[in-house]
Image (cartoon, rainbow, N blue to C red; front, side, top):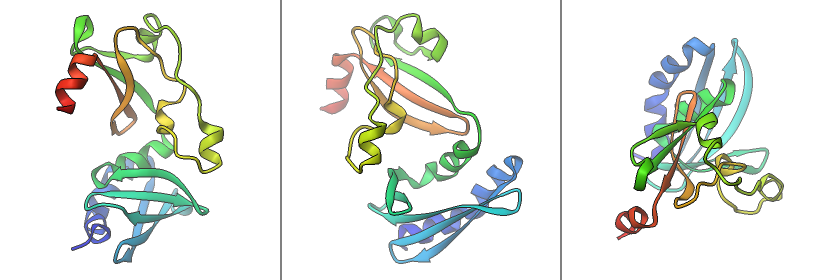
Length: 171
């Protein structure tokens, strides 16, 4: 069974999660390509092409441009939910004095010493740069990051880790 078929099997579960936001989806396709049709308030609102790039990841394209690269199939419903609802960023720390802490934007702004680059223009030109979620995010001394960690309904988690933790996880 290919990934598009697996995503089609998740359609009911995704629709159940999106119901409170008055959103529904229909996934059509075969082989390794497909389309997601999104309806908001019972009217077709968005239409994306999807393409399998691994056994569990897809690229999402709109008007010929990749807008989401390597999205895990399990995150698709959360990704769609976040298109229509406010998103809160949460920042998870690994190592040193902040180990295990999850901070809000307000909290991390108090300890940050700058922001990451905004690559939206480069992304619009089709250049591959870091994920859009990493644009204009806080930089914290003694930590690497931010790095994309996960997406949830209404939340995006970014991670910061010390060089020591990074080396352990990369080994």
